[in-house]
Image 1 (spheres, helix red, strand yellow):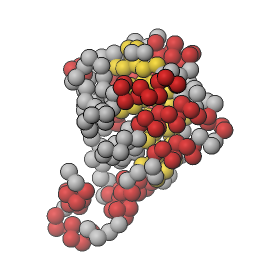
Image 2: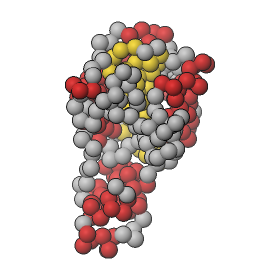
Image 3: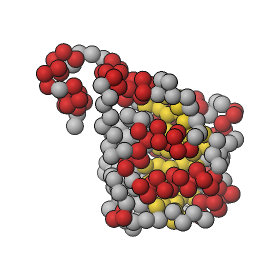
Length: 246
């Protein structure tokens, strides 16, 4: 659904003429005051096994903070903060969704919202010496068309955060085609081959959901969990919610 049709749906056909010329940020703030959610099934795509993976990661790894790319309406953002009780730094590239979540979390301690390109955001965040040597969980969930940011995001993260653990949403799960993933055609599918240019230097270990998609709930989107530090890789190998692919 394009933005105009979405706005009409949110506001209503009769009111659309009154609001259609407002800037996107103003519309986002209006969405917040009208309690618009449009959450795509809830946090983490409404996937209960994805939640189990996240909770096990939190329990076993001992993170200091969480970084999210792709805030959207903030349902996953709020969930990550509430269940982990960790500070969450989140970035959104769309002005309407950013304005919405800025208002939503205005009085929420522990959630810091940012507007802009995720790659610039990650580079900026890496300037904080208090973060780069700690265990940080990164949840990459931004997807705005054929500008694929994930390879650059993963590179920026592991070049600056050696003790990071990264979960990438919408990723192809090997040998399970029922898990949905981003695929814009030749060379533009979110899969292990997409990350190959990084692996020769970064030596990343890859882990996937241990439960098949037919037993998952919600949107049934695939994911991969990546790590580089040897001790963290061993912890991931020991989790029964994940299976190793490298």
